[in-house]
Length: 79
Image (cartoon, helix red, strand yellow):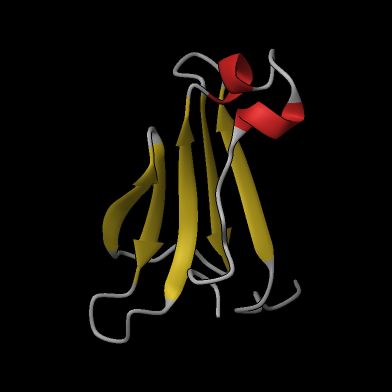
């Protein structure tokens, strides 16, 4: 079995709740910060390093144009 790498993007979708979960590497505990309405960035409490995202109403967001779906500026978040 291959070892999990910290730079892998893992994606999970809960259809019944319409929530998309993304984590960078193995999912870890952290603090969630709402960066847009219904979009949460999970960060490591000690290092402030981004750990992943949670997007609520994921399918609903993508029933509109992609430009309006998730208007997030990640330049300051992932730098």
